[in-house]
Length: 629
Image (cartoon, helix red, strand yellow):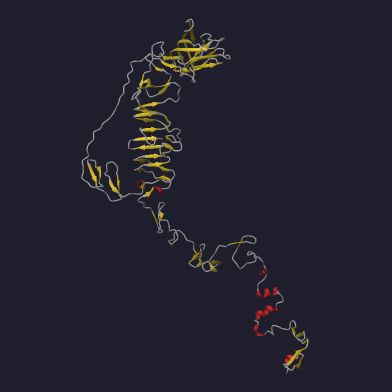
């Protein structure tokens, strides 16, 4: 057996016959480019022996170039990667120039640039699951990405001049049009609408007529003309915040009877100055002269007054309307000459009035409050900028304000009114009131146990019992109880104004004053003292005081023009027992000089004003006065 000449040059082969075959071995050692070891088992090719040239045509030139490179850096240079391939992060501002369009947004950051025609943007197409690079098309406007049924592309943004599906079309004329389902603009045409669908707001200026019952939580008409307060069950007339069940600011007029605290009254149709209001016990009121007596008497008998009830009524005769032949649905109306019928109209039409002097007609319903069907308005405030007419009944908050159109009654806090105006609770009226055609101005204050009197022109005032003008021309003031006590008293006080005995005096007038007093005191060391006083100007006159329980002694009282008070006090002695009344009678005439009206007063007290000294005037004491010119 022999080896090829090429191998034989490098291998020392030993051949022997084993009896079963021929066995060849190679000896260990350097065989040139190959080193043999382990008894010829291991052959090692020397380093650098195999060159790219010996690899033949299976390795490309590019591959040979990489194999020839000394290290990885040289291979990156061969591949053209540069240093970017070895970075863990990339700064697109400094390291990606020329690769992506960018705008410098700061260190290690960038902002997305505005897409211009010719630029490329990488986007992800969710329909295919593939990322793609797309070209920005178009010029002169900003481009937006748009999904287009499987493709993602740039397109001009939609606008309101487009009619394409999904876009709002251009507005079709004014602010009253609405967008319809077919994509066009048009004014709404509504034949009727449920109250449940009416939102809160202000109704246009017009008259709205409700043909059935109207219910509301609260009602406001023209800011404060009529205001309801359902929280406190109050109604205000010209009163934005009512404080009483019925709170009226201004003048009120009531015709017919009035019921106050379950008592019904009929008011008189005329009045006389200084008369007082009197009832006949059955509710009929009348103005009568206050009972008074002669000179020196406090109260006399008046048997000449006659109470007269006047009942006024009107009756009108009726005429039969000529019976006309017609069919169901016809309407009867007056044409200015006679009663005629209007034949039934088309189903769904409404009877429309054309005003005075014109005949009614059938007409289709328009978009107005007349077409609102029955229902409940949503909880909110509704403003009517014109007249609100309710032709049936009105209910505010169950019973705060209730109208009964059948019986022409109004209830306030009264669900079923029994009178024309039926108020449950407290009512307040400011200004004047009119009862049975008589207008009254009420006093602004009141005094316990006083009675109401009129001046004959409608001005009412509270006067003391027995007060008012009498046939003798005097006006009487009767002292009432003070604080539940049958007297008025002052302790540790000098001359003090009496709470009841005073009246107004006019400039340059003469007056006559009479008084009958029951007094008492415990002034054992000082006099019970009285005098007269005017609030302004001066007065002068003469009079006398008579102590009816002593020696009938007469004391002259002189009042000069030196000041506003008497220069000499009316001294009555030294009463020593508060439980022993003393009767005093005073007569006094004086002339009042001043440029303005003033107040004439009676005063009493203790001259010394010492501690523990009390002066007292009992209820039932009387002052009578009158002007002499």
